Length: 496
Image 1 (cartoon, rainbow, N blue to C red):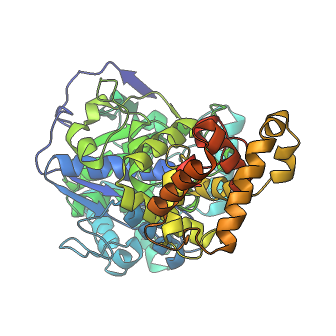
Image 2: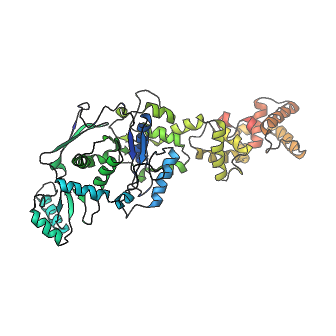
Image 3: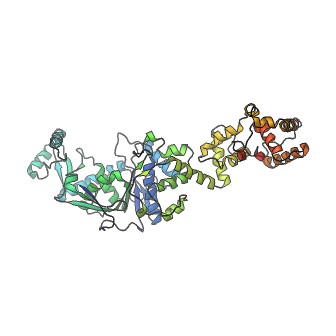
């Protein structure tokens, strides 16, 4: 029923993917849980396409699943998008001329019922009085015969007088779309190329309004996209089968069709659909683990897109300038946590020292390693770990380890035994300086310069320099034989 043809067989439905001045895109999450990284990628691509084309990015909350949708979940999704920097131009919090932007609020206005009546009046839809029991029996019979279990059209050409009699009797009914005989729907998908459906073999006459007047998902989505003037619909490939119904609805109502771009799935490293069993999958989990929003955007954009160069590190502005739908691949993307960590480390080291120190300092204070986020200690610790960490949260175990004092273990090593004489002299000088109160104050803003001067004084006083001074000094103060420059976790000599 679905026929994928080679890209390039143009159609009136979709222009070239290269540009779309004034593009209007949307992200339409269902607030039934946290924002998944796959959804975040969809939001990112939609945001980038709108930004690149000088258009608008809309946020629409599809909360008609009253049993699962919560305002708390909506708030979490909005917070995750805000953390990523994907600010919407129109939406529940930003407002706009095409609201309301929650489907539950749109339903209260009667828009869907009004347009369903329009389809009934034009003959594009009809009322179906089949009971749930009758439909179950039809479905079971079709499956037993090995046929597609779609509606058989019992009420498609019913006697108008019988329909009116049942209406007068108050019998419940659904509203079904009348699929035209022999109809083939085709789209030129910006990612997947030409896709066509034999409609009768695929969906049959489908429901628009359930009994009681509740509109179904595909009817709401088609109407909302048209009413909000969405020009490009970017979404996951699992929605591809919904497209045929939405196109039929839009054509019957006389609305223009948007461009469609269906993105491949995001897979785990075992090439199954990314899920909780693969580890963190929600944006909030990655935020709590110390990832940077700009690094998340960088990595998510590379999950299915490239600009044909070898560049892997992008700023948000660079992504907005380089992104294009015609460079999005239709092959599934594998979520590689090691690659994400590497990209995050690159962004972390690219920060200004003050900004990185603020992030690391806040983390150290929250982890109970530092007394204050903005202390001289936090700044020094940030410098020490800058080249070692990929995540901000990597800093605390490194700093805790550096603050440990494993002197007894180190003294048992053969290397330390060779330093026995130097250690005795350097250690004695340190203890004497401490007792005399002349050691630099660690809380001093000039501590590093003062400590460097003190180390030079020790060397001159003891007649030691180079390794003969630095190695016993480090062993005495840190309890370690090696520092950052010697393969160990400790700080270099002048930052001890």
